[in-house]
Image (cartoon, rainbow, N blue to C red; front, side):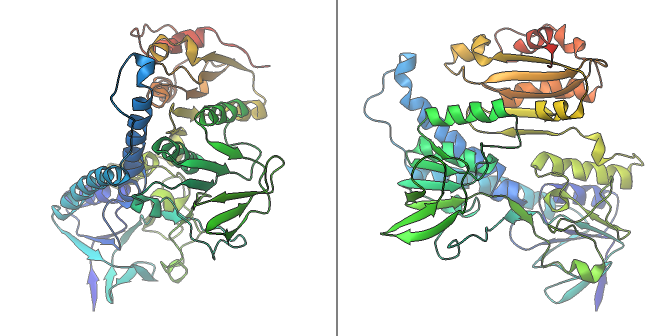
Length: 459
């Protein structure tokens, strides 16, 4: 027997609960399907737990620097990894419980626990029960990608998910992957007290960023004792004398790195392989991401894909924006689009990197006339006062229209200060609006007007 509802939501990541609230608030009956836990990646394996761990690592780092600030502490600084994990777990549980209470408190909503599988364009089964709706929203997220490299199936390795269960200090943590996830864990565990080696295939870390950003991040990490192996080729793994041996085959250094534990952080893949999308006729690209249009509709009318699964953004904030786009178009007669948003994200190492819009490399490739402003964080009084003057600020503007094209703020509070620029970009205002603003002293953001006033032609 088939149960008919007005809408089906598959997955409880960032977009799902909020959309369920709007749909039920509009009087629709909703079947809400989740197979593991409320909250998705952000709450359980991503933003909330990792930033909780980073906070503990930052506290340990600051404590070890106590003498730099004229503070005396009795005895050596230690890290209790069980206590660190317990703190993280408590924060995650509170967040997941809030999502669960929110969803369960919605009228006209039924929660189904289990795997959803399409049996038709508008029908899914879960636990042998068939559900049908004219509107289906796929919000199933993604998972760590497992590399098909020699030996990786024969050695134990961790991912960002299994790292959440670690309550001990690895003696030597090898991290394969020099992207955002890998670098955050690298600095975190180095500050906890592990020896850390990052192995990266590309010629530099976070290769999507400009070279000066990559170099500065590497300098910051190296300054804390993190070893970096770039240009790694023929990566493989094996057991050796009780250790994990990772072949790096780098131009410099031993071609093999020996460690006690291995973390693999080489990207993510969408959770689409067991949904039965082919039965429903829902199109995917070659990587398994569901194809959507500018309003997140799939090729099947009445079916939408939101969050990481659509390949149009890999962040909590883009997933939330996906919900806003769908709700605005479906319920508010407000034609919002994915292409209305500006790329924005952060790397939460310490100091953090805030990135918006185009990179310098992108602007150069576009061939347009541009202006660039750049200054070191050592010119920011707030950073110097805090003893955190590493990094720099960089912004690029269109020489003709005066529009801000992009920025990279690597430094103290860069992940927050960058919004000064992002909001001006959304307002479609010229950079002179903020260059003439009077910001509060002493803050990090106060140097942004000075930075913009000092823009020179990008040669």
